Length: 314
Image 1: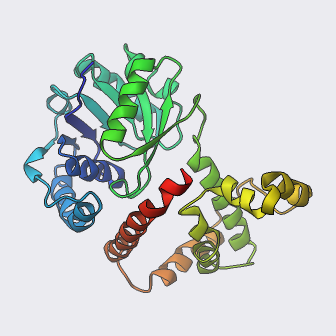
Image 2 (image 1 turned 120 degrees about the horizontal axis):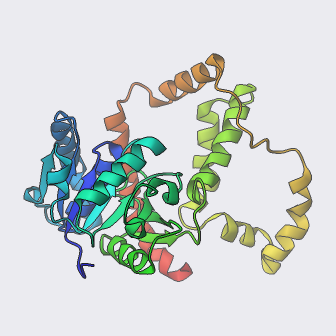
């Protein structure tokens, strides 16, 4: 097991893979990107350059050495001599298990293999590997180069040494790892997000609000609190001097009221149309790239400001 992880392979160069690459480059890691589609190379380098102003300011870098990034279409060449592999392909068990088997076969026996899966079980993802003990899930959040959270999910056969090494590596690239105590479908954040998403679909499907209405109520309400403190600490404050105890006494009975449905509605053509047209209207003609720039500028200022306050709470 390498003591220091410097050479990394990122498998898949979509939004998540590209985000990982940018964050790793910002921390002076040598990254080999793999994608079967050679056209992704130009898209990758364009996105890396677009993100540089935000990344340089966030991590206090004068510049990023793009010579540390290479692009390959051969998996065996990509995996040669790397210390850490971050897989970022489509959420599909068959695809991931087959890919992980090949990664396990062609990578160094002491390298760490991490999947960026957002909900699949690592014990299944690594079930075809001869060395499943070196496999974990490292689930990030978009944009990966800006948001510090990463959920580490061990499989049933993941070794404690691998878990510790992965934790240390993610910290070395300025991330805040949260280790899930045992594997769980959907992990932590996505299960919480999914509950909010499903309720939103019901509200829109039944005509109570638009996508803009629901986004605005989060943006101007609980979302502002959530950027500093989570649901439970927020509810603790809602109880006044007695904290969570009083909050549960006062609002606990509401848990029995029919305020939520949780089971997702069917994605009918009518609901899909409302979602697509609603978000298109919200975008006001702005491209995804332009909105991404606005988001990144906001997140940069927010993250820099949050550093002044989070030490007082954490």
